[in-house]
Image: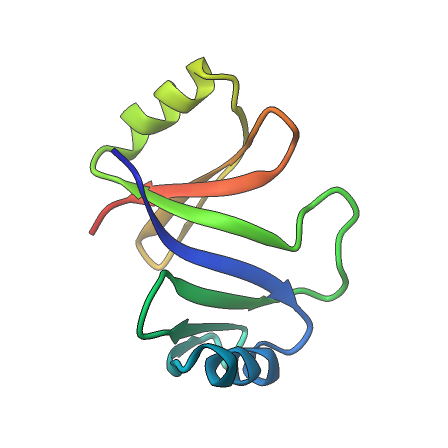
Length: 115
């Protein structure tokens, strides 16, 4: 069974937008990566929010996407593909790997291994 881990938002200024959202949800900035290229905000309730820097909004890529975790990432990806998802890409950075998929309407989301 999957659970929502974090909602990630593409933006031009992760620090400013992350701090704004932290104030809105009563949360706090808990981690920043790559010199504020990526920022994580934790709220008292609900999933964490991630803010990642992009140069410009990219046509065709949604600005907000779900980051999901599963005990067995590959098994979950196979299940999702069988349910009609499409694989978009695979990534790995600093030992962390995830698969980008799109739902039947083309909305992208990511699946990683549960920690």
